[in-house]
Image (cartoon, rainbow, N blue to C red; front, side):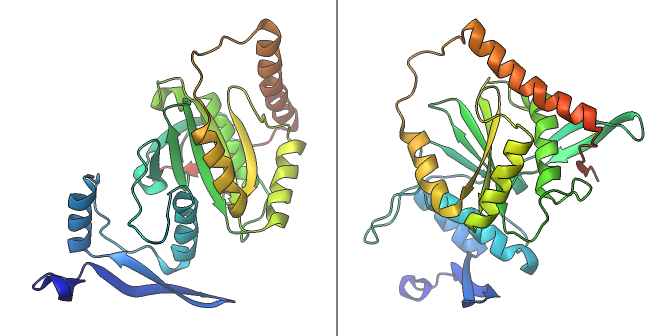
Length: 265
């Protein structure tokens, strides 16, 4: 492309990649000139251009997170795909979501920081999806390990019940999505959510999906007819929603589990 333009610096580089059982996957990345041209052509403005490459250990994970986004972009293989305008996709590295959590061992509030892999905002339906891509390398049930699914779930519970409304004052309901590579991993996380009685609807909710299922699920949610007005839950619905959250909280109180977070550095 740069050669055809003439005098143009390279806009793409292909010196990144990762290996797997399927062989080597080359990862193409924009150069600084590529970012500049891309912003001009698409009419977009980035908050900041990445100064460093994604670390080799996290490259595949980063690529798979972006597969969730690409699955929501209409493509026909013939014409350039258009950037979706009906939702907003934000990578976790652009988010700064500190929150407080009570440390039962130290008997004091600790400062934590939440960093999802990505966040998808759906203004038409007033929803905000926090996406966690599960590669399968971390344990699921060990709450003492900060990278485990159990620990992530605890952090999100503390965040949704605490500082979420401080960071997002629009009243949109948060949704946590665990996206997995395999059906086995999805089933294990779904069992964890059911075991802990984590809400599936209401004030906040969570669910587990495979990468293949994430695309149709999110496409359905994004394309659904938006509500004409925001309904006020009936008394019975309000009781059901508040009860499901309270039961989950009480279970954790009885078990005296420490909901671990990522220390602020």
